[in-house]
Each structure stands twice: as C-alpha cells, then as structure tokens.
Image (cartoon, rainbow, N blue to C red; front, side):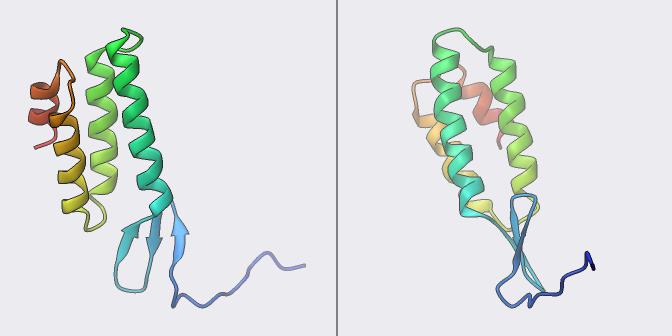
Length: 99
C-alpha cells in the first residue's frame, strides 16, 4: 500500500491555514472566520477581566505575523480598524502593535 497520493494543484491545496497555488498563496476563509470569532471572544474576555491586555496583544500579533505570509494587507487593515473602532480600553495599544 502506498502512502503517496498525487493530485492536481490547479485548485490549490490547504496547508497551515493557507490555500497554496503554484505561484501564490491565500489565507483560507475558515482561517479568517475563526480569527474574527477569536477576536470577538477575546474582546468579551478582556472586558470581563478573564484575560489581560498583553494576552490580547500577543494573540493579535501572532495572527498578523501568520497572515503576513499571504498578500493580506487589506484584511489585516480591516481587522485593525475593527479593533480600533470597538470599545476596547487598550485600542490605542493594539493599534500601535498592529501598525
């Protein structure tokens, strides 16, 4: 029994939250949807005191670094704008970190 399988890459393939094509890659829609959910959850957790601002900043920085491997500047800017527009106490800090 062989463990190797060969597929066409015309439609790309999913790997580590990206859809990889022959000459470019994109973030998967699932990855973006989960991050938006995670951000909403972090906002409520932060406002209720369950997590600290450093945890929020670390999480957002990590995802931003991950997303930067794909051409996702507009997406990262829209998420930064959402964080800044929401009523987070640390919006200025997060805005500074996500610049």
